[in-house]
Image 1: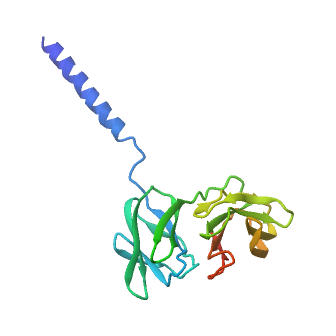
Image 2: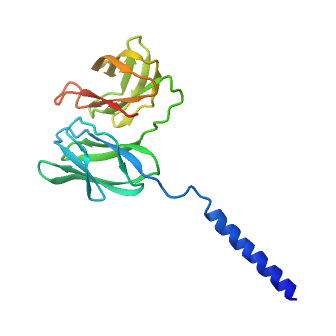
Image 3: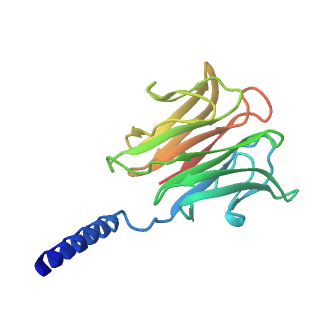
Length: 222
C-alpha cells in the first residue's frame, strides 16, 4: 500500500514538472521593437510622437518628413501625434507592437480629420547581393500608383492610398525611377543609387495636381 501511494505521488509530481517545463519553453521575454514616424498630415506642422505619454524627441517630423527608427517596447501601446506649434494632440491610437519587429507609423489626412496607421516593415533580405525598394502611397487624391525604372519594368503596381507595396529587388546601380498616379507622372527620381543589402522606400505625400503638390521622400529602411 505504501509503495502504491509513493508511486502515485511520484507520477503526479512528474506530471506537474512536465507541465511547468512545457510552460517555460516558450520564446522567452519579449524584446524591444523599432518604429519610425512619417508625417503625412496635409496641413500638419512639426509634430512629435508620444508613446504611452512619453515624448520620443527622435520621432519628430514636419509634413512629408520621416524620422529614423527608434527603439520602443513591445506590447499594446498608445501613440499620440502632438502638434509642436499649438502643443495639442492631433490624433491618438492604440496598436499592438510585436516583439523584435520594425514598424512605420504614419499620420495621414488633415488635422481636422486625422488618422494614424501602422505598417510592419519586413527588413529581412533574401539575397544580400541585391538592393530592395518599395512604394508608400500617402496621396489621398491619387489613383492607384505605379513605380517603374527607366527600362520600363514595373517595381510596384496598383498601390492605393494608404497602401505600401512589397519590396522589389534591384541590381545595385544608379536607377531612374518614375512614379505615376494612373497616367499622371507624380515624381521622377534620377540616378537613385541602390546599394546591395539595403532596403529603400519611396514615400509619396501631398496631392496630385493640387496644393500641397505631391512630392517624394526617400527612406533608407535598412
